[in-house]
Amino acid sequence: MQSFLMMLRQSNIKFILLLLCVAFIPPCYALDDIPNGLPDRIVGDIGGAFYSSNLHIGTEGAQSLVLPYAFFDYQRFFARIDQVGIKTFKMGYGYLEVSGKISLDSYKVKSPINGNSINKGSPIPLGFSTFQETPIGGFFVNAYHDFGKSKGALYEASYFTELETYKKIVIYPQVGIERQSSQYANYYYSINTGESALTGYNAFTASATNNLIAGVMIEIPIMDNWYMNIYGKRKWMGSGINNSPVMNRSFQDNIVAALAYRFK
Image (cartoon, rainbow, N blue to C red; front, side):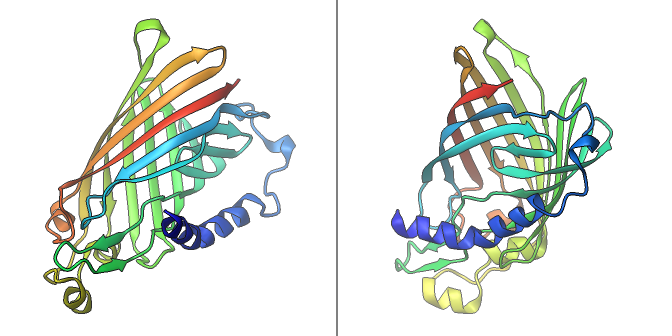
């Protein structure tokens, strides 16, 4: 666990520095320029959460961490579990955003053949996004460049709707699609000749791929302004990736269980 946390800190240091640069750039917008639709206080959920993911790569199992949890807006800044950024100008039902995706996943491949490992680090996706909160549901669109080692591109589009159920428990079903460029997919899921000799895997070149996503967020009121938020997501990898010898399943899973206080 200590080695994993050290690797996590090292692989994300550039990401954190870039986000700080974005957040503290000499402001293009003075406080007086903030539109009425943007809150002048924190609005949303802040707490702690258990994060678990399983990329089904090699013999590595689920990766689990306990970390802070945030899903809130403050002026032009926002945080959405694994995404943070700055809202710029109004666009449709939302804003054009400069954002980054926080990746807690470790692309460490341990071979079941001889036990040797290769570590490809973690992606550092930075780019643009938008959240369109429409009368028929929420649409998220993200376009990132990986400032990690792949230098590839990552695109995401997803849709959430809201269903209120028993005792104010709210369910948010999600469907979506992710596009990984050939450069992105090939870095994280390919096996070159040197890696093949080290691990015993057959050499493999990954290609650009579309991955389908389905998930659900369940929001459970606890007391006063305290909530339990449970989010689960499964991603089915396209043929450009799931044919890779490092994949032991054709899908990847993420689970977040958070206890958070809601600021209104």
